[in-house]
Length: 135
Image 1: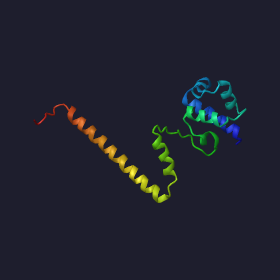
Image 2: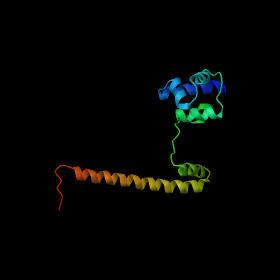
Image 3: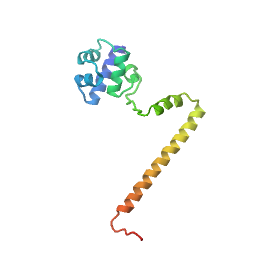
Image 4: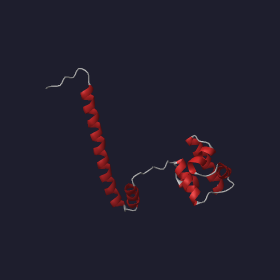
């Protein structure tokens, strides 16, 4: 499939999935509606700057818009710059280092979930009708 055609189809699908018009996408991305229309018609491809604006506005990956085999996954938003940079370091680790890092991260996540469950149970006990305090 020709790149312009693939891009135009994926752009339009992404916009429609988000439930917005070309004009609304234009406002979100700071690209004119006229230019977005040309992208969706397959007349032209965006330059790097406009591509970046579109992927941010639509919350999709550049891979999805440009590569036939890419799935339509949403791009996660990482608000903490340090976590964002750490992601790229983690991605560059060898398999053993990656497994170790994931083990540590999954352990921390499991602890957090356990704390949340314990808090929920405490709240249930406090608000249960018919329960009396033993003071």
